[in-house]
Image (tube, one colour):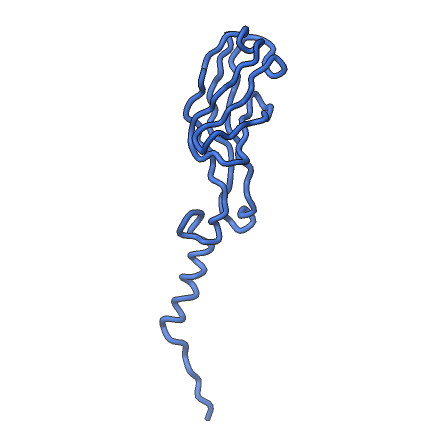
Length: 137
């Protein structure tokens, strides 16, 4: 008569634990599949947060401070993506000109980081920061 062997209890528990690690852990160091995901940018402040229109006419530079900026992060002002210099993971800079701002007002500023290739496997990647206002007087 053939003998039927049952898998050990350790091997029965190993497979569900492994699947949970990869599919339920989310991104970060606990899930090695998501290690290449890009973080969602966090915006903290604008410098300056207020400038007069004469500065814009002369060509001003806006510094965006925050965290989790990566080489592909860009600054968006009122829906227009700007050529962005990534100074560090905490600082971005963009030129402010009359081609972007034609007069006084409040302008929405946020940082966008495109998603990486890990979105296909359930890992969050990239995204948009909250919005801050740039005031032109």
